[in-house]
Image (cartoon, rainbow, N blue to C red; front, side, top):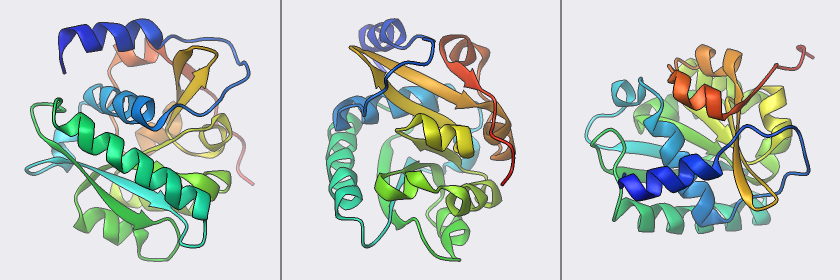
Length: 193
């Protein structure tokens, strides 16, 4: 990534106390996602010729499907300018439901899975698939991170924020650099249900 963009993202990404959080714009979510992936020392272990981001939504969730299309377009634009760990970035659409999600994530060589729409409201099955496939899970809500998703990408007022569920990230095989953890709000996972 370009140094100026990195500096701007780092300045805007701070650990803030819990506050009213909103969804990032699709462009902001795509750029912050790429920045977080650059802090995962295992990202290249999951990539071959590109860093692949799986965009997961439920088939019958129209709002989730629309969000997926907007984030996909933003990733396409970002991929024209930025790489992660020296590799190009690409995305694939996956269904957040179904027994075969872990295998699908493995087949597409996903480095990360972004949980979108209603799937973020109950991410347990997706988290199990991410752990089985050793893929970093991300979502745009605190609740998803408190449940089991590894990284949250949120907007607090005018600033982007990163939330990290460290236990989930480790279970998914991520090796997050300390620099990210000092900027992020590290959350304790919720007790199992």
